[in-house]
Length: 385
Image 1 (spheres, rainbow, N blue to C red):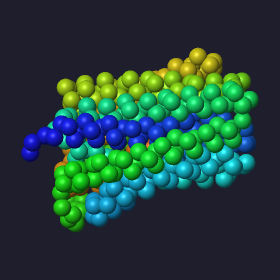
Image 2 (cartoon, rainbow, N blue to C red; image 1 turned 45 degrees about the vertical axis):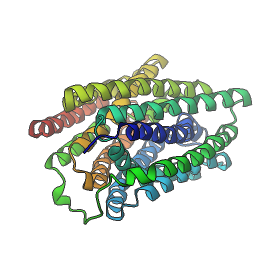
Image 3 (cartoon, one colour; image 1 turned 90 degrees about the vertical axis):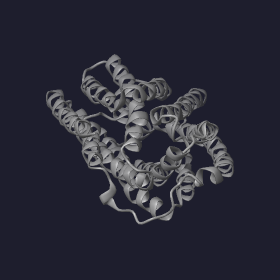
Image 4 (cartoon, rainbow, N blue to C red; image 1 turned 60 degrees about the vertical axis):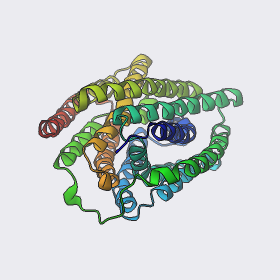
């Protein structure tokens, strides 16, 4: 089939701008949510566990939504609906206790579960032929521009208003409105040409899923289980630091992610899936450095997390597309993200507890063992591919 490069790059641009505005909203909030929750009385264990639960739900429910999107071919409906639910984040401006705040945070994670398998499926079809690593890497670059802009806007608002969280969350209604406009533009321009590239609806058979996908998904689960979340890194850095400074640290993390993702994508297209060994091994560093005293270690952990997560968002997703056939790709993304999110659920609770108790001597062996298991299953995947 002839590659439509114009459609591919137009899709990267339009989907990327949609993601950009979405990231301004929810990534703008993520830099201050840990401090916001801490100020409302939540402990590190609660933040780690609930944020981990949010990541788990946001990933685990993708399996169901991935299958639904494949069966119904309603990829655009799932994509648009999921993005609209991001409104949960600006609504935090009206919340005064951590329990309700966490419910809205969980709701935003649900929105990601609804849209991501469908959006990634549309995107993978639209950009077919120009290199999956390159396509997802460029998409992540645009995505991360939003992830940098959001925390910058929030930091400025906090600085100007004297640390008023309600003002910071309220300002995010503006990029949410721009997101809605760009969703309409993207749908209007791409629905026809992209829909022609999607195979006809047929019954989803899990027997068609490649065996390597399960091993790869298990590897990703262990990898995320042994990677401390950025929420806990920011929580650890927050005592004695002003909220706007924490938002700037999160901005720096996203900037590193933005640079890493396209570079990793291009390298991935050149050398293949063996590049995945690198982020798996690197995950040991921020997950142990965060237990050391000093703001410098928290900053270093955040920047290393940015490097690793830039690879998560580009080459991890590209690998799923490369090992699955088009008609079951939504299901494949859903299954992969279920395992991946389960790892964040376990890791969030474990790292939250260990940080509360300052148990570095338990954290070090835990991280090494879990990442060794991750690399073992990754090796099994690559050996059979």
